[in-house]
Amino acid sequence: MIIGDQRLAEAHHVLCDQDTVVVDFPESSVRIGLSRLLPEPDGGVVLDCRVHLRGEDGAPRGSASTSWQRVLTGRPGALHQREALLREVVAARSRVPERAVARPELASLRYLAAAV
Image 1 (cartoon, rainbow, N blue to C red):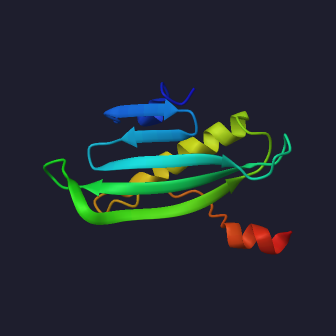
Image 2: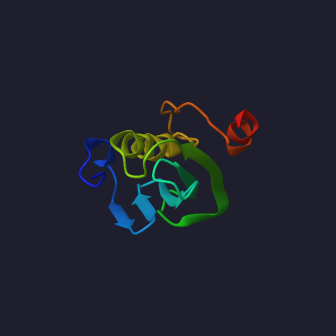
C-alpha cells in the first residue's frame, strides 16, 4: 500500500519484501525491518530503521549511516501503522544534511519499556 504513495514520488526504487521495506532516494537509501513486539494480535510492531547516505555521484558514502528504532502500537498492518511507516521513511530523508524535512514524534524502546 505504501508503494504508490505520493510522498515517495521522488524515490528511484521502493521494495516491500516480507518484513523489510527498502526505499532508494537520490541522496539516501532507507531500510526498515519489521518485527512483532509481542505474539498477541494487538502486540505492536518494532521498526528497525537505517538510512545510508549517498554522495553526489550516487555511490554510498562509506560509513555515513544512521539507525534507530520505533515501536508502533496496535494490530500489525493497521492503517495507522502504515502511515507511521511512511512518516519514518520521509523523516529519514531529514537525516541527510542537505535536506530539511519534519521529523515524527520519537518513541524509544527504553521509554516504552519504562512505562510498562
